[in-house]
Length: 78
Picture: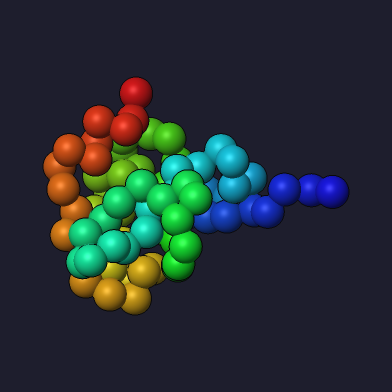
């Protein structure tokens, strides 16, 4: 069985779900959401993809609500 394919909202690259980082909206804030319920937004494991998604408001569009993107989330990327 093949793993689900998702798209990075920063660069648009398609990759297996386990290669990307998932985020969800929780109480108007963006939080990492590997096992959290709800609509998810995915980025590559590169800081540049996260920053591009944040600057282009891609998280708001993908999650279909306004979310606060905290700068501390960039610490998830190595």
